[in-house]
Image (cartoon, rainbow, N blue to C red):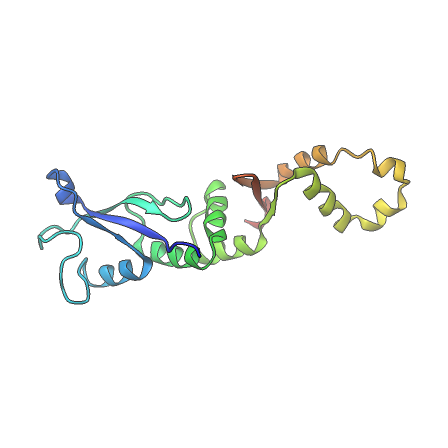
Length: 179
């Protein structure tokens, strides 16, 4: 079972005063707090007891490596947290989108998640891709030619048309044309 995404939301006024008042929140908790002006369903202040303290900041993320900074759009953050809770591959899709400088958009993240490929060996990925696309052409060549193809080199050349993101031993890739 995977852990639910959480963010640590802190009161900025308290932080400036040298106190750390805040709370770890899941997407649902953050949604309720945001709707109730940083109070829970019972009206109790969540970030700090002072009503005049209204400024906040996200000080930490527990979201499979995702970090949107101190002041993300809360509605987008909640939506992203729910996507990542559903499938951690959405966190990787977000990194691919951020890597090409595209703006965060939930629909784009979902499209990238569906279009990205994952491989742990560049040569195997290149061979499989070429066999899928050029099956007839490769079959027409003599085996002594196809057995001498440097598939790792082919993979390196293919990667010029892809944006990649490494996670551990796996590489996730999206074709540049997908953006």
